[in-house]
View 1 (cartoon, rainbow, N blue to C red):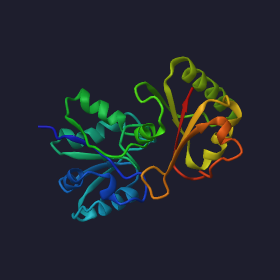
View 2 (tube, rainbow, N blue to C red):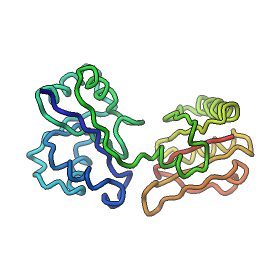
View 3 (tube, rainbow, N blue to C red):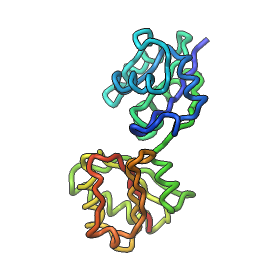
View 4 (cartoon, rainbow, N blue to C red):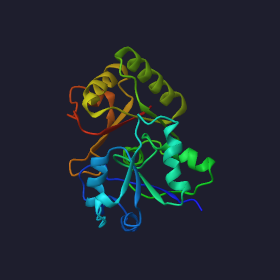
Length: 234
């Protein structure tokens, strides 16, 4: 009988595990001997922090990140088809949402392998919750283009969609490019468009504020190298 694939949440940063990860999830971690991870070092660090008592050298880790090719997923799936339960860990937050892992989950479904999502922090949903924007209808765009011309075009389309549909528009950026994106937003968008900036979610340094683009101009927060989620609303 095949094992079960558990989708394991991870803290969004260096916050106490007990503040954001349910106790039953922490208890489950000691059951697993097999983990699919984005980065071996950070996975080991998280498991130790989460209270896993097994020796790290006795556990089996399998790399699954943005560089993992589709054909390699079959080999990873063999861990489960051989009867082992296994956990899939993100670098931060929940796996397979704006994050590698969905390919393995899809393959598990095709092989009738049970998939169990475990509760934990999602920066996308937590930002939406705290934004004051439409939580009934929203759209997540992931990461916007790196090239400035394409990024500006994407921002114009996103704002237009927000105005026409009433949907909250959500997107992210690599932390070291946050300020460049933020400057493009206030340069491109209409002054009465609402912008929520949610940075360092669940950390002691967390800041979440919603203002109009006009109100943000001239007083941009310093979010350089701080994990952030951006939300737009008409």
